[in-house]
Structures are given as C-alpha cells and as structure tokens.
Image 1 (cartoon, helix red, strand yellow):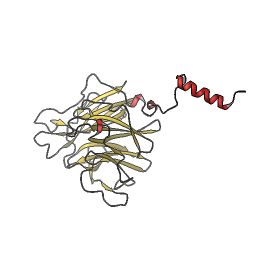
Image 2: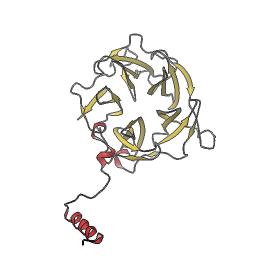
Image 3: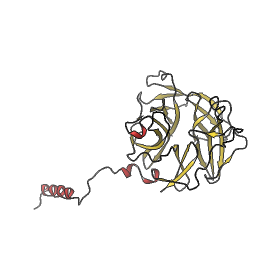
Length: 306
C-alpha cells in the first residue's frame, strides 16, 4: 500500500522536474490585464491648451477629471496663461458624446473666485463633490448640483489620530474613495508620501495612521515623488493609480498602479510604470464595456485595454 510519505516524495519529485508548477500567488491575479495593460489611441492627444496668449487656458496642467454620465462625458480641467499662471489658475469644463472629441463650455472658466487645480470629482446622492488643490498646494472642497456652478467649502481640515491638526505645509492631490457612509481621503505632502484620512461629515478628516500608506521609492521609477490620482475597486481588490517621478527635479512623470485589500496596505505593481514618456495624472473611466484610461498632464490622452 502506498503511504502518505510516498505521495509526498512523489509530489516533491514532480515539482523538482517541473512537471507541476509551484503553487504561488500569480501577479496577474492581483493585477489583471484589463486594468494595467493599455494601448494609446491613434489620434492622441485629444485635448490641450489653446497655445493662444489671449485665452485663459493657453496651457492646461496637472490632474483634470472625467465622469461619464448616461451618454455624455464631462471633463473638468485647469487652465492658465504663461503670464498670469503664478497668480491664478482657473477651472474649465469640456463635454463630449464619445469621450474623444471635446467641446469647451462656452462660458469658461466656470470658477474664478479661487485657484483650482489637480481636481477629483465624485458624485454622491445627487451632489458633485470636487476635491482640488488651491494655491500653495492646499486641498479644498467644492460642491455643485449642475457640474457648472461650484460652491467653495474651504480648505480641508485634516487631523492626526489624536485629533490635533497636521503640521503646517502643503497637502495636495486629494483623491477620494467613498464606501458606505465613510469618505477616504488620500493626500500627499510635498509629493513625497501618500497619507490616508477618513471622515463621516466632510468637515473633519482624521488620519487612519500617522504614517504614510505609500512611500516614494525605494524603486527607481518613483524614488522622488508619488501621489494618488484615483482609487477603484475591481474583483474584490482596491487599486490606486498614482503618478511618480524618478527625478529629483520632477522633470518627467510616469503612471503607476498599486493594489490593496484594506486601503491601508499597498503593494506596487512589479511591472510599473504602466505608462511612461511623461504621461501622468491618470485614471480609469468605465465606458460601459471596459475601462478606458485617461492621462491629463501635460495634455489629455486616452488609452484602451490591449
């Protein structure tokens, strides 16, 4: 009679000769192809600054954001001029029926009272919530009912776990995930690390932990800067798309992805970056059949799953 020991030794032998593949966590299970492998649209770029010094959006920059609602795409973006860009940056809106050909809203810019850039938009219970940077990289909240008129709610109030305010300094690139009645805010400080705070009322945000949830490096491609652009949930796991720089002077950016089971502990994709050549500030947009991937800086490009 063949014993358990016999079967165990037989299994080990088969593994050694390669007849049975070792049992291990396959990276393709954690990072499925449809959310990490994209090809560029042949007619990129889709949208960019006018290059006209007489217009308010001579140039565009950093993260704009796109939502698809029913049969229409809405894109919010930041515009500025070379002459006045250090003083003020404005919010604009463009629309599209297919997400490829865009028309600027005729009454742009749609918000003039505050510096607005690096925007993230989420719709909940009929209200649009825009988390954005203002001057000096300070994150703030704006709300709207019609996508056009935005009510500024002021700078975000972020606290340490003990309830004290976080230290003074920039806190930007706000990225938000909502689950149940809890809002999750991912923010960066000096683009060096990503932190996580939560809120129930959108008034006070409290750090989940007083250490970053994602650090720059030690990988070469994100050694000098990291910032989240979007978090999605796909096949039971959370995915963060983030931009990063391998250069101390941030002269070039890439797009990358990380995975998490709990929104706190993140594992970087071993094949990062997923997009190079200074294509950054990227996020997915479901088009009904698949995920499109848009990058917004320094111009708008779209990518489709391979």
